[in-house]
Image 1 (cartoon, rainbow, N blue to C red):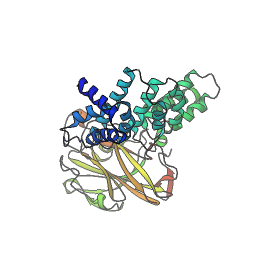
Image 2: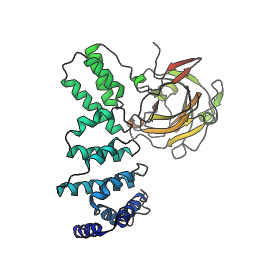
Image 3: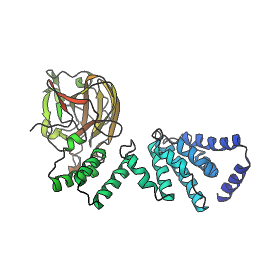
Image 4: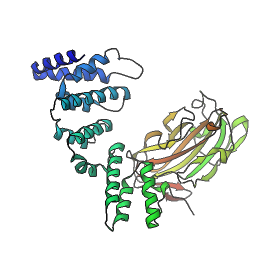
Length: 385
């Protein structure tokens, strides 16, 4: 393989510009065509080797080709970029620092590629983190933003300034990761008696109308439709599981992470579905992400349009595990979450719950978006005393 790469590299040096460009573009196209089902995978190893053999000239085009839409292709391209960089470093040839820096800053490129560009630059230029991380505090890349917040917290720990509280509050405003937010909130509460509302910080929905249980069977949970998927009428009586009559009821979660526990509110059920509905008001039309954490199968609807579904049971309850991307209309918007429980009897499989939040692509609350409760508009995440 090494001999093949060396010969290919020498050959690339002799190619005219257009042919050299084609020698990079061809394997990139082959790698982008790879998918997780195995289609178009027969030549992937050869394409990867051919791309890596092009050397430094292929580094930026390879990074630019990463789009995160195809995880399998992204992995091949990412490792190819890493191999190219490693070969350059071993040969004691500097990577194109100015181009990597510009790439890392450019939000039009895929987060995975931008993170790799930043990491390659930081390995070569030890001054890069101090120069770049402050600019990533509100970055759409969760990894770059997390690194930026971590750097700010490290500065605060070493600071002797009297403005530590203000610095912590500033860092909190940029933090989106649960562990970082909790650490900052704990410090503010302990040292400054300044409590932080986690529900408001994460824009978690606290006011719901819920109904259920309905029939739901594993493998069919997301194909069997019930009335709330068509229309939400809160005064309507519905036919639930075993033909029992069920009604909507208002519910406010006071959990710090706004968890709605259907076992507590509707009783323990198996092969069952429940629905939760909330009304979200937007001052103007804008894109939105509905992020849901749940150990159960679920579907997410916004204004009658299905944004997301996944039939998966008891594989964890990570915040933001499910992400539905949609568009809020100006005015009131109806959000419906369907959560399905299967028939497993193990102790670890008894959770039937969810949490949901409304945010932008960076995970931040959206200005001008509120939750409608009765005839009032409340800040999302607000819980009455």
